[in-house]
Length: 593
Image (cartoon, rainbow, N blue to C red; front, side, top):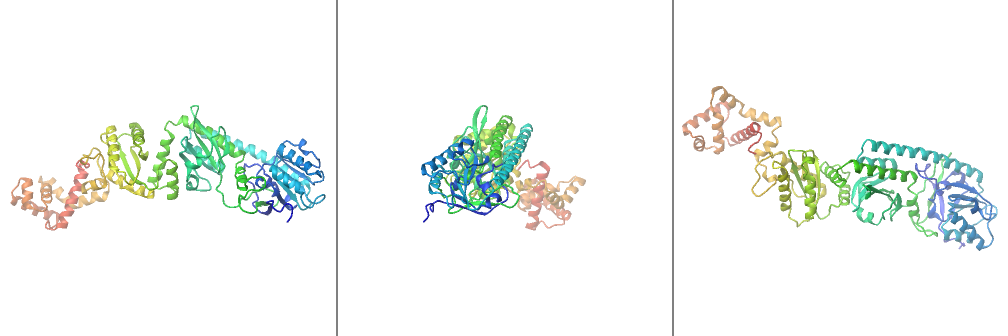
């Protein structure tokens, strides 16, 4: 076994031809360039640190090169000046590591044909990437190519930064809300961006290259292990880039930019080069720690965010602070409104996305009974103060719910209750509060559902109840709300009163009779109504109309002649009863419904 056989190594493999825009040039990027790849580079130590940025390339044949470095340099050497004794080798490596050299690249052509064991050990101890070249490489050509890329990248970075500042300035000047700001941040960075409050509730999530489910599942737990920061920094076990968001001089929450989810062995991409480059891929188990004590996956995560991402997050936090001052509506309320509308309109990409989003907002979604409640008011909801009042009422009683306006005069509530928790008393209290605010408010409910994906159905049912209820209608005994079982024929026709098919039906069934009454001053329609109300009994109709049975009989024969029907038919009487009820609804606007 060789003296460095246990050292994890990195071989070269085919990779992409460009580094992500806005990311600094890294050691891995440089190693993937054809000018270096031709030397068959092999990473002997520090594979987990290949994400280090390269500020410059320095060729040296000195025994003390560190005195000419400033940090961030990729050091190229033939190995000729390397000390003979292990202590000298350690000192050589220590000086490079102390000054912050990005990596040491040694050519195994002249003095050495295999890297010395003391050099490997020293680099492993200090976490300095050590790369060997099996073939001769023109170091001057390496410096020319890399320096051209670095200078070009710096110019591009200045232009990108300017565009970022201009974009966020435009958002602020037009008074953009938090949704617009977070969406812009995700689009500019190509990362998922999440806005949370101080209790780690995710109020806004704009996924990029993933799903809401992937971004928000287990959000509170993951967020709590990511420590707070005073400025944009990468932190926590997942390597989030986070920045604080303030309101009136106090910390209000934070915005987080998430790295892409791990997908096996990380591949480090290279910058654009004259010909297709190759990119190093860590060999062995993904994320396995190397001798430097780091993890390959962790190093890749740390290198995911570049200066452009930091700039985007800085400006995002600033724009959110300004937006918080401009938009008076609390963002928690805005988040509830948005989540509720997405549920009602079924705008989530998947049920998993919906569950993850609502759980991240603090709403239980497992082992829960959901119930939709709608409140329709005469005045706009925002003018009534009903929304914050109900939110506080539910919070005080410890009832989990989403509360938010669904339309200018419609407020929605989604109750999330334990299976054994009675819902009628909760709805009753909500209904009474709504009626205190607006005595003509219509409070309607849908049916209970146990799956979050079915809440849209509960809201549709509540909406149908509301459509069938005239404002100010007398409430059922002991209740402040209406439900599906309250909807009879009259209220169903009230809900359909604007449907021309209902209007045509009533006219087709009764039009000739109504016209006859109008021309001759008769009241046959009333007689027909009494007959139908008496369930087809002429005696009962005579009693209701204060007429003799014979008079009723004669009038009904005239009705049969005018309508060309047989009133002895139960089906025909049913049809006429529906038509009469529809006529009443159309004439009085459903005053009796």
